[in-house]
Length: 215
View 1 (cartoon, one colour):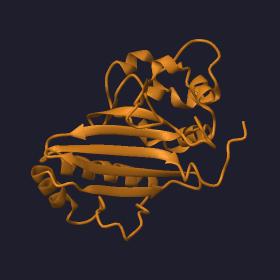
View 2: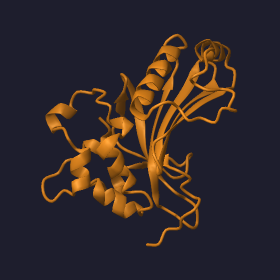
View 3: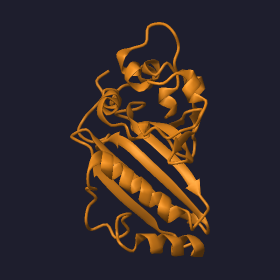
View 4: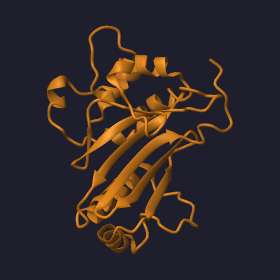
């Protein structure tokens, strides 16, 4: 489960939290991938309802304080939740994404999960599994066909093993259209030899284009 589903305090909890928190503390002790990181159905609607809201309002919905989060200064606008999330057996950091532009400062636009892999033989199968699981949830990818390095190309698996072993600086990308408000993306970046970064984002479509915060 994601960290957004783990915060459960007695008292008046808003309906949106009840959609996100569906498991007790006893179940939270064991790290399992329950698929909630995909944010489908009612969970997707709950997250989308928070788009454009200011940080204090978003944190209040999740019963979080700013002190519960870690601000990643190297990536402006990312606020890291305290506990990792298990995705297909691998730990990911979970980040709340807030706009840093002048017009929409501190408004929420999505959630990001990030992890690193150092095993070149493990990575292709792991990414293939993620792509299949995301596709099962959102349908076929809607990535612009002109992108050269896609995660669904036939030669991707061999490409990524070679790049990881040789330290070739390449990025692979895939995108899924999840309705009018949201897009989901999966990215693999080669950072250096034997180190790959995996990033999964569930985010507002064009968060800085076409709207202004009115709060």
